Length: 184
Image 1 (cartoon, helix red, strand yellow):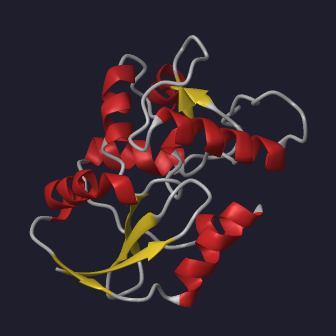
Image 2: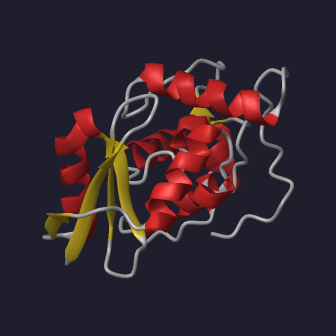
C-alpha cells in the first residue's frame, strides 16, 4: 500500500497527516508521536510505503479550518479505517459525537451496544489512527476527569477547550445525548 505524508502546523504541535491514493485520510498524529503512529498503521494496514508529499488542498484546508474554528470541513473528509470490527464500531460512533460535547468510556460502550466494554472502548480509543478527525479526545473518565490521550493530556485539554469555546459559548462541556442516529 502506498501512502502520502505531510507535516502540517497546528497550535498544539506539528501534525503528521497520511492519506492514500484516493485522498482518504489514513492517519493524523502529532509529530512527537511519529513512531506510535507508524506502529498503529502497521497493525491496521500491514506493510506500507510512505512518501513525503504536499497535502491535497482539501485535507490541508480542513485541518486549518478546524483550528480556525470551523470543524465541518474536517468532519467531511473521507477516511479509510483498518482495525478490528469492534474498533471500527467505536471509531464510527466517535465520529457522531458533536464538537463541544463529551462522553464517558462507559457511555460510549453503551452506545455501541456493549455496556460492559468500557475498557475495550478505551483500548480502541488508544488505537485510533486519525486523531482529531476521529475525536477520541471527547471521551473522558466516568468520574468526569480527563484520562488517556495518545497525544498527551495537555493536548486533550486544549482540544476540548477549543471545541467548547466554539460550540457552547460559556457552558460547561455538555454531555452527548446520542439523540441522532448512530450508524455502526
